[in-house]
Image (cartoon, rainbow, N blue to C red; front, side, top):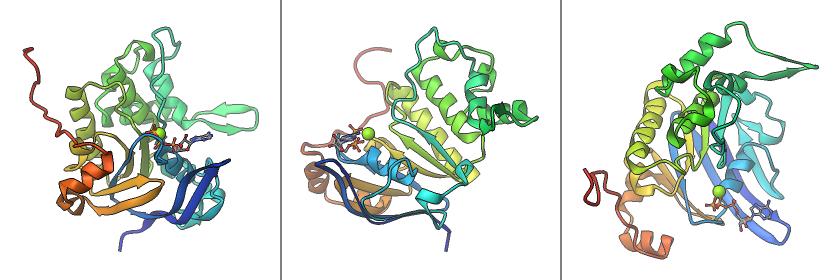
Amino acid sequence: MPEILIELENVSYRYGETTALERVSLQVREGEFWAVIGPNGSGKSTLLKLVLGLIEPQAGQVRLFSEPAASFRSKEKIGYVSQKSNAFNSAFPATVREVVRSGLVKKTGLFRRFPSDWEAKVTKALAAVGMESYAGRSIGQLSGGQQQRVFIARALISNPELLILDEPTVGIDRQHMESFYDMLGRLNREKGIAILLVTHDVDTVSELVTHVACVNRSIHFHGPHEEYNRQEERFRNEWYGHPVRRVHHDKEGGEG
Ligand SMILES: Nc1ncnc2c1ncn2[C@@H]1O[C@H](COP(=O)(O)OP(=O)(O)OP(=O)(O)O)[C@@H](O)[C@H]1O
Ligand SMILES: [Mg+2]
């Protein structure tokens, strides 16, 4: 049986009076690719923050690689791209190379040291997301989709076993979104990296991911994507409160 990387057991989390998550249980194993879906305010980002040990649950257990999340120290095993990572304006004074390298920073006393082979590591991480020819470019001058790839490269530079992404396609158009998701699919299949992806593009990713979790304060469904796809359309409509429109990848409208 593949190793359990993330384990939540009856986890509840409150922000003051607001209960964000209630008795959530979930297991993510080696090699799996999970889509976490749910409406705005349903607790998806909270779930990721619990997994990352950024916040601690009032009830229940969170374990990472079989260790309690709160005392988990092997942070290099996990790459994380947050919901608002692509907010760079065009004047931001860093190159792509510097942004990706910053994923290697270890604070050692007063000094910030990089390993001597950092440049090769940067090139490899950029190659994994198809951005190796952009190393010298200024981050602020890339498109939103290109910036997102760079942030994934930053998250990949420590060779993580698990990649955690919070709505990484915000600001990416439909055409680039598809190639972005294909890239995630390749990282999962070819490098064996487990992925936990929060997304609203459920129909786009449902063939790509291995598992789906529907969160709305509690977990309403979790399981293999085939099982999710077999659910009645009614279930999905109830879930979103309106019929879900299938995403078409062929060109829409009259252009081109
Ligand atoms: N720092 C906070 N303080 C108080 N309440 C919060 C805080 N962060 C989130 N919440 C509340 O907790 C609930 C879950 O929020 P969360 O950010 O996890 O939702 P989400 O599913 O990620 O939503 P979205 O799709 O909009 O990103 C919401 O009701 C939200 O208002
Ligand atoms: Mg969120």
